[in-house]
Length: 226
Image 1 (tube, rainbow, N blue to C red):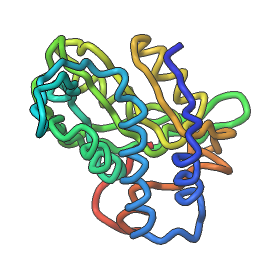
Image 2 (image 1 turned 30 degrees about the horizontal axis):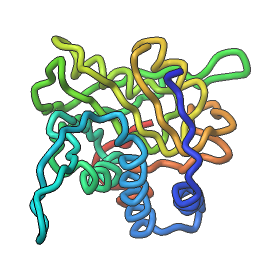
Image 3 (image 1 turned 180 degrees about the horizontal axis):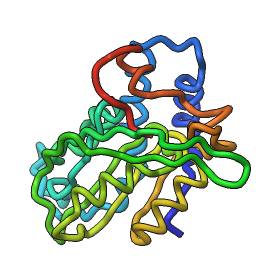
Image 4 (image 1 turned 180 degrees about the vertical axis):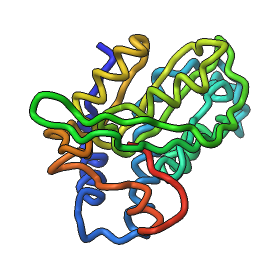
């Protein structure tokens, strides 16, 4: 119930661009931003709305406004930055929290058991989360789900928000199960369900690669979310 695969053809066409191994950094980054906008539009029905009065050239009429000021995006460095930038075009009054988390491989996986990781959170600066907050975590590649689970536990120490939404370009069933086991109330939206994970926990053969490196260049400082 908490997992949704989006089928919008415009969105799917953008996913194909970032799956392409020949897509350069500039286009990859711009495409992730565009995907962030598309996915934010797709989930806008989950937000509360309020009635407003609009004064046209002829009369005052009834209108509607999204109540997005209670939305908090969690931008996990580096990979989520382009998606968050795109999503803010749809939810311009949303707040943004910054978290640096990296996935450290402890043990490679095999046919019986997936790879094992630890995820140190090295920096966290997040707006106050209240019971009315809608927490949104964009994640280009939701593979094992270990980073997302760790980040959510880190930012939700005191108060549980009204909603938890994960936006993933591509995901693996292992990551989906991991998140929903830890946070059953979460809603996960993805544009693509990958075929599986390799021994190091990457989505293969149809994932977007390392979104941090592919957005900002190999060897850039920082860590991408997996």
